[in-house]
Length: 214
Length: 214
DNA sequence: CCTTTTTTGTTCCTTTTTTCACAACACTGA
DNA sequence: TCAGTGTTGTGAAAAAAGGAACAAAAAAGG
Image 1 (cartoon, rainbow over the protein chains, first blue to last red):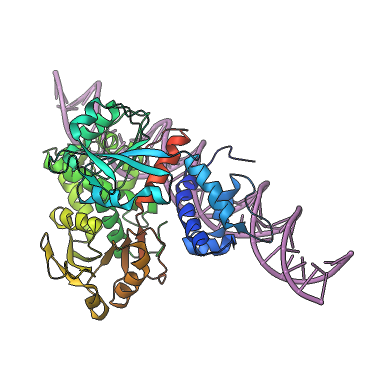
Image 2 (spheres, protein in one colour):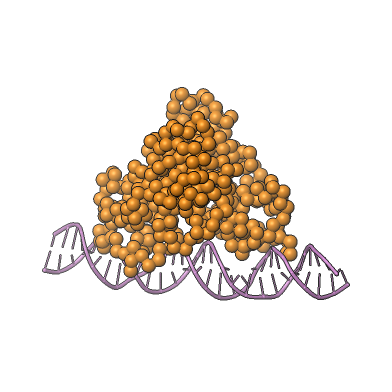
């Protein structure tokens, strides 16, 4: 019964599972039950078991899940064991924060280049990542790049996305507070902090069932 | 038929609608149909009409929606027309990015104080927000503060959240890649950029139905 | 004023996601 | 070896969300 079709909702939770398992392995926990894990990530244990079951039998009845094994399985599932190269466009505070964050350490992902328009930044490095001129993006061949992280001001987001698209990039993580218009064969994921804060405040004001998200 | 119960999925979309309406009003567009709006935010027009209908009849048949009116309605719904005060904990690059972003301009939200441990930062200001010592958070009375934005390193997130909780804060926007353990009457919203990037890469690798998120 | 067009609000149906409930199996300890 | 306990994996039910279709109402255009 292995991965015939993994529901969207399940796929969205895998990275959270992966991160939590990394933590568990780090602190030396070798086994965990679905209910204990569920308490950690605040998701119902049935949902967790069903999520895992889409990938086959990952646990052992009467025992639970082996954290190391599960973590490695998820790593392979999430990354297919290849290093994913991404570029970052827009080296402001947010871009710098992401560069410093250094995804590579725990995850099979590396920001290989950053682009900016500021001449003072071009040519310098942040956490080992070189900052190139935005102009270079236009002519670049980025077909080996998995995704672009967009951290430019909203007014320039579409423009930057178009450049990246032309260079061969087919995945976008957009941090600008604007909806991008891109072809449908391109995958765009949108993170908007303003929206998150507004949603938080809405749920606080309309304090109905206090249900934590994610 | 006014707001009996607004579904979670609808509530999550309201901030996006609001932001888009702000944009429309700014560029001088006074009316819009659900289908045109749907194209903009990339959500089915039926879903949009249904979302609005939970709040009563906001549109006019044969005409569409008045952008100004709808925007103001959403503002009231999202903020209840009160200025929401929030504090920010952890003035690194990400924290600085959020301070510069200045929510207040378009949204009824203001970061009234920031906290950090770095003596070099304490006492300074960023975009008009004063940076206080983390120690001050311990004794503070923050019952008038709606939420805390957590932008501290993962290792200190729980600690910072506990301090904020003790000072009276009941809402959290957590940017640290760690799950917080807090009482159930507290609302926590979690934004994890690593998770977002991983999810993006997963969907690209398993390029099934290319469905854009949000 | 009357016809045609537009577009909402809503009902009903489909799909997706979550939750319940439990059989099956594997550990544990005597 | 064997009862007893814990925990998974899953089929079936329930709940939530999404989408099609359309009546009703308003606008637009003579």
